[in-house]
Length: 102
Image (tube, rainbow, N blue to C red; front, side, top):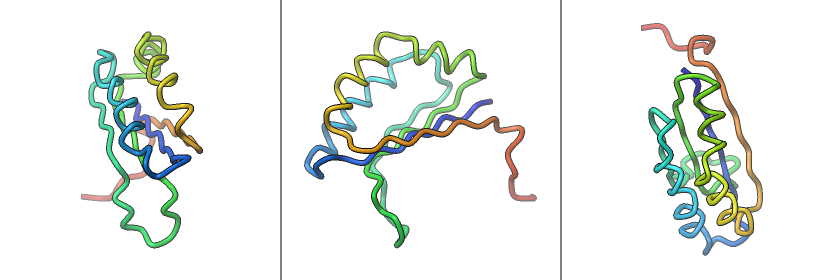
């Protein structure tokens, strides 16, 4: 499984909801096994610049590529890009991740 995490900061704080709404169309794309769009709870006392988080789980890199090729993905970019400041993305394969021992 591949995890896809994208973090956004807003140009203006009042655009948070519009960014979340613009990203929410991504949940209609069928290639993700799980997709969540949420506001950062800002619990960490250091570095609270991130406003909105996208968390996705995909069967593999091909599924993530198909997700990004879907027309709704571009529609989301078109809605969010003018409102966001920074965008950070990370992808990793679950079976290569270091995890806690049970």
